[in-house]
Image 1 (spheres, rainbow, N blue to C red):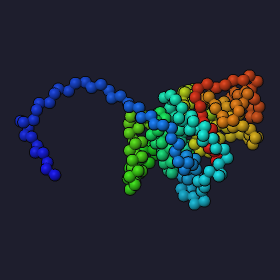
Image 2: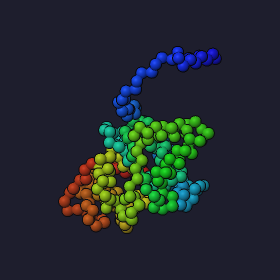
Image 3: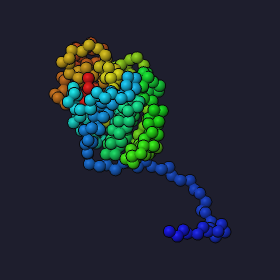
Image 4: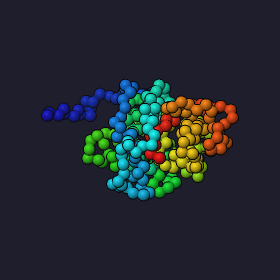
Length: 272
């Protein structure tokens, strides 16, 4: 291949004086027809909790099948994710390592299908030994960048571009390392949940924060146990006639029907 000769300095045209440029606008990812990911993608994000670094990094007996899921409301989850509007999808992460890797693959799918912006909520520092922080996410992307498989490197590149352009936002909040449940979260975090299109809570600790870590009757509807959550609840089955307030004791109902406003936390598949 012949190379073009370099011009002599005196032959180069004079450069135009630089002018102030308009700030670059963030381009919205092209909206694609709703496309469900392979079931293994959601299952990997669900069962990634079994690879908790606080216990074992490799569990040969860990199940990744759908047969052991207690409640599978994935149809409702994807219906909310594919809904209209530019409100973000919030993913509240749990553990670093293999679990956050599977979570990032799920986030990549949400971004690639044009769901809208995604907020990945992390802890400012580990509450337990393996809790995911912002540093863990960046370190994970570094590892994926060095993977010998091109699709894996492509995933890391897309996620870095999404972070740079503002479509993937990494957020840490101090409430995630407090010994409290979701009934007492600060107002700014509650507002974020209320205005989100979808909230996905990952892991055992977030499950216990959501239901209050109480001894519920096993037949209690999940929408009753978590109906106080600061978002509009859309259960798959018939809606409950009343919604418990933060002061309502477990197993009882509020005397006045109240319905939280905002967006919807989807009842995601649970391994509990």
